[in-house]
Length: 460
Image (cartoon, rainbow, N blue to C red; front, top):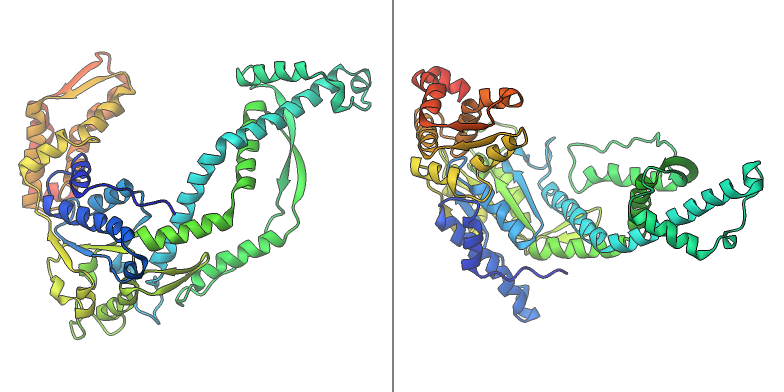
């Protein structure tokens, strides 16, 4: 299994600072949780299984960085990661999303991730094999054209009749791209059209939602593979044969084993909107699907259980769960005690201020201003914001959040789109390639909308 990357908590926070402004308490909490996973792997095996992950609840309004912190943490550590909305789950016995599906989806993503990693390692070897196959086809085509029998439609010469130097010359031309446009005929596997469609019961649990896929794959593999010839350019043939060879070299048993280990030892599940299922019986949620019922279904997954996936049994004992919610109406203590106990770390994220918005526009590595600048650069525009313009955008964003619904940093996206609407539309036609946005331009585009509170609810 690929080891969890060995970052110190300070290094983790420093890396998160490149993309996320503020929220230092949350960054410290996830940094410690990630480091503890590495620490756990360093202790003796008899103690390792006893150390439970330190799950986290992040409390704060939408758009303040909860999801981004979890996503960047997973990317930084190279860990399998999935985000799910807790409000999408229903308790056992009702039609809806089964809580175990989060682990099955996480495993599916991890298999894809490991497969891509192994494919990258095998790519060079596969390209060499593809190159040899294309050279064989090019030599065969050349022999048929040059042979008197070939010209008359007779038999071509045997492979050994062509001197090796000719192959070396072809290889040089092939690598230089001189043969990319030449047409060759390759043999490919053709799978007969599958007429079998398997529909699994949607409201049942226990992995039946995967059964449809498994049966379909099984029936598909039973169908006899047929060969057919297809003409394509040399460049296309190289890519096709290389991909085909990678698929042949991949060891699915090894990929499956590696993926399950990664999920069990370093997987991260981000449970968003957990406040939507916070509540006890008698809370007036309705007679059908209770919030407490959903919590009790999630509890075994967080506590540690065995989940059946199409890749085998996955244990959830050491998966890190990061839950988040605004908790405007409910509060963390409204969760059932057993579930509360499984989230020992709680951090509160602060609402964003005008100063935070300004920093978000300027500081992150992938800031919105950099994104728009690079997008407009593709039209040949040398585009930039003045500092005063950015201050106005930050001011308007904070003002609209205060007057209407507070959607955090997402407000910047709607504000920026409104400000740059005309420039984005006319960019290909602009003759003067030096284009700037100043404070007056921002005020001109936004002041009328911001004054009308009702209008800003719909536009901003």
